[in-house]
Image 1 (cartoon, one colour):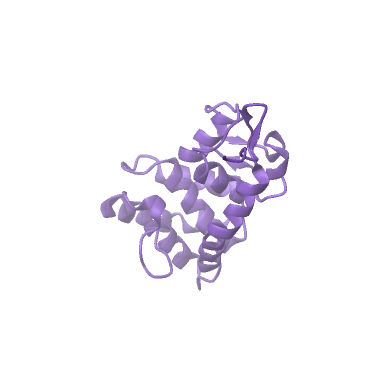
Image 2: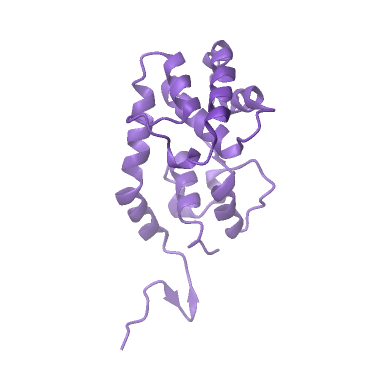
Length: 186
């Protein structure tokens, strides 16, 4: 006989956020930390922008999130972002940085919200800027919708999310909502 699954209660499955967080911390968080450290250690803002725009990891390979983007798209984005270095360097909050990246990349075909967010997150690591709200794009949006949050929103406050997630950084929550979107239940 199979034992009842610990996440089942009265025939209804509930989300075990503590288990999800433990799994995230064990399997995915080390990659997030390594990625952010790579960008923090870049010798200059120009080099951080260059690597972020090309979506290059420490081994000069493309990050998984951007694996499908065409090289011509990344090259065009790099050129535009490097031209905006001064404006990027003047950003004092992550939201300002994300807006600057979005405006700079507007009109470049083949890249979307996830690329712009990831680029801002990586450049933000060098600038010492990180998100304080959870931005909704791609898989993160899917996960948030499963929690009853409108998919039309740009971002969501940590206070609107399940209590166990609130102690995490906004970037960690963004990762969790995306990575575990298929398992999330309200």
